[in-house]
Length: 275
Image 1 (cartoon, rainbow, N blue to C red):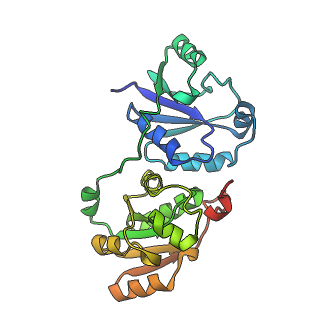
Image 2: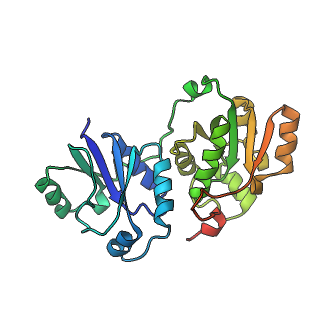
Image 3: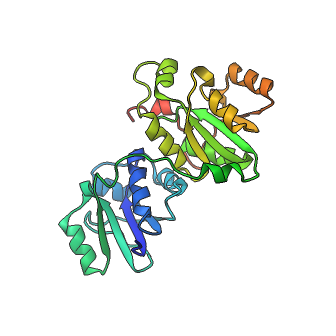
């Protein structure tokens, strides 16, 4: 089914897997335009300032593979209305059931817009994405990265963006039991299926998988199967076990400096817990 341009609107502050699932289902209806509110609009409509600045929220939205276009709302608007911006007609405003209202429906009807509400049943589950078989035959080098990717943030996106320049990027997410073993109780904050889904939704990622091993080399079974050319880590992910493994198996080991996208603040998951 196609409804022309599909419009979603919000602050998109602190994106989590459930928010990305909403974008995913909305994009199934047609080309998706995400209208992100300015800091001013977020403060006026939500009653409090956003946790993350507009430039960072926009960068995260643009990295989501389901989003075709990101438009910025420069000013404020009524909660039941869409911000003023240029969009192709016909268009449909899509909202989650938790935010739907009769005022929104009346607003759309009066402007010739479609109106679609996605229920909790529509948004259930975090499916696997992509076509691994097609990716394996691309001819590019295969690059693997591993990690928890628990409180997902713009630093993760920037890391994926940089590493994807080296070849097809495979992200192996640590399974829940191993994350608890390495980091202690209270970790991870989000279950492995959500963490994998969040990573796979980033447009720089070829495939995201859940590790099946344990310890700092929990991705060893996946590495043996994927046979990557490069294993890339950030400075804080550099471990002697990883270096020795790569040396023994003829895998190039790359250590990247942790640096945010230009103009954005540096982020670390540990510092963001409970943010």
